[in-house]
Length: 103
Image 1 (cartoon, one colour):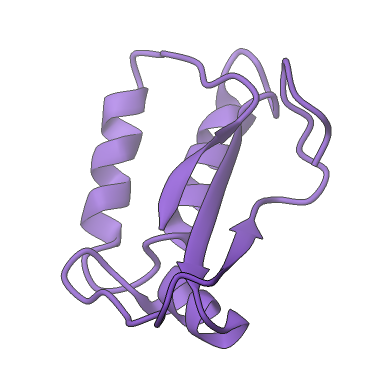
Image 2: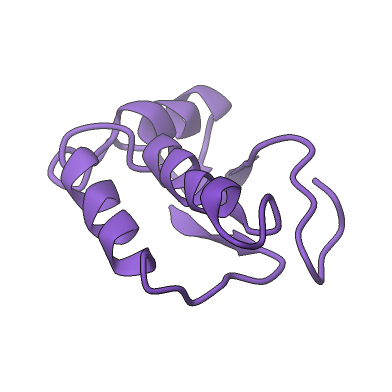
C-alpha cells in the first residue's frame, strides 16, 4: 500500500495533527480509507479548499483482497493481498488538485 497525493500537498501547521489522528484511527482498520478521509478533510477546511487530493494504491493479486486491505487492514492488522501482480487506485472522484488532472 502506498498513501500519497495527486497534485500538490500543502505543508500546513495542522498537518501533523491530521497525520497523528490518521495513525491513531488506523491501528486495526481503515489504513487506506482513513488516509483519504483525513487528508481530504484537511483540504476541505484549509485555505486552499479541495486542491489537495489524497490517494492510495494497494498492490495485490485480486481486487477483493486489495479492497479488504484498504478498508479493513490497519498498522497492527495488515491483511494479505497475495502476489503484487495488480493494483487498485483509491481516491475521491472529482477532486481537482493544483498541478494535476482532475480525478
